[in-house]
Image 1 (tube, protein in one colour):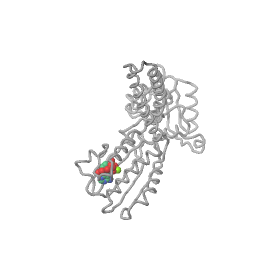
Image 2 (tube, rainbow, N blue to C red; image 1 turned 30 degrees about the vertical axis):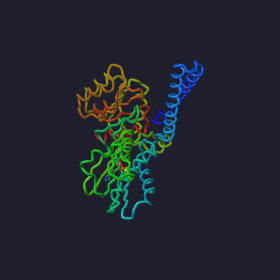
Image 3 (cartoon, rainbow, N blue to C red; image 1 turned 90 degrees about the vertical axis):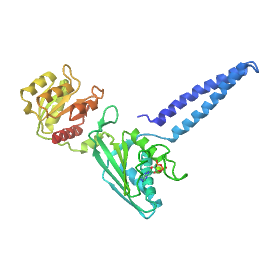
Length: 370
Ligand SMILES: Nc1ncnc2c1ncn2[C@@H]1O[C@H](COP(=O)(O)OP(=O)(O)O)[C@@H](O)[C@H]1O
Ligand SMILES: [Mg+2]
């Protein structure tokens, strides 16, 4: 993914060469213009404006370089541990720091930006307790936010988030201003103590990553809650080999118009113990299903098929047997919007090529939650 920083940097570079040409030719034309003429004066203005623009570009370039925004999967628990280590020496002894990290999930982001998020929330919390002391409490765990599926990239969406809660027992945020605290330059601190940019930056970063931040504050405690989508990490092959695919004995209907692929899937699933029926024509598959809808526990269907596509098939089957679990397999070329799939009530989307371990897990998850 291209970050804003690199993007700005790239544009600034291009712009710089264009400006060099403008400045160069303006200078040339100015020198050739009759001395003291209006033409010479106008070209001198172009030359000067060009130089001012060049200074601005230089600033943008410096900024882009500084804000290295490389995105990588980052274990959020590690970020918290690092920040707490950093804060420990400067935290007054009247403030107890308690952390409860119950998740190992990675989020997609820039680690220094993620550090800044946690650091800012913690310094605010510590600041609020600097007079009376108290407890700074951080908890981190995994949550599923069913109503918040977020697109991770072009191929995947997730409702799996990490949830960070930062709690302090400071005097809280005045109800009259709680709406404003995320605004840039909003601060209740003395001049020189706070610039009011902390929470604005926190919100900006979190929202860029598809998450959200919210606050609940009373006179006894203040809780900031951060949600960030868990990164979809592809399991490496070596890891796959070490992981045991869990099977079952349920009855599966596999529908794929590519006969070879359908056979391969069937063999793989039979190897896991399932009883598999294969159909290579979606209309026929629907007929088979209509004949005895209760003979299957799960339908696994390809998306792109002639006559009746996977989502259409799923909809038809659902009319016959509303609760039938359906997994749709789809290639990377998008033919279906994932949000749409969720709306249709598709239990899971599997992306081709599906690895045995991942597929086995998806199937178990769907069967067990059905
Ligand atoms: N944990 C907290 N307890 C009480 N007030 C808070 C807390 N966190 C933020 N605030 C309020 O939000 C304001 C804005 O915070 P922030 O954007 O970080 O800027 P700054 O810390 O520079 O004031 C703070 O001035 C303070 O009034
Ligand atoms: Mg702050």
